[in-house]
Length: 135
Image 1 (tube, rainbow, N blue to C red):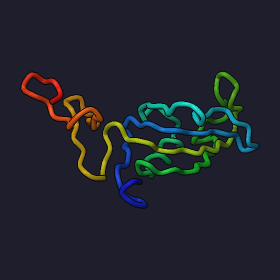
Image 2: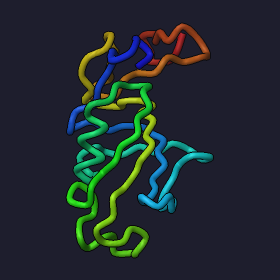
Image 3: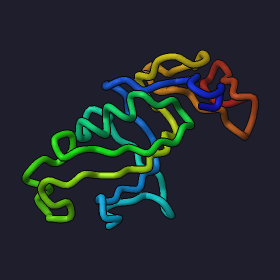
Image 4: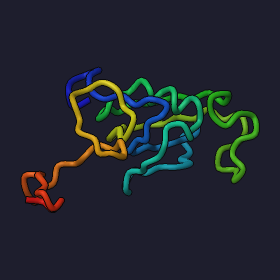
């Protein structure tokens, strides 16, 4: 991660993450990718087990390659739309850009009442006046 190799914020099963990914079948057929577009955000609890387990070992800012056997992916059935046939081994390149919520480790972060990390603004010191407006 940005704090050094193997350091920084890691996601938990309860985390929402922001990522780029590129997914292929074992023969190289691309079935889904965010490369060349915008990264995506979603809860880690809503993905296939092999993907979730691999991302849980990553730190914010890291890139990894994951090989996911069928039993940790879409099983013997594949996906309903047919893009991933039953029994497919999946290969993902994943770049964990940011752990948006429920991360562990890393340096301190200031979070709002909703539990999401506050972002530094470019239009001032980031301080609010008594009226709640930026100074």
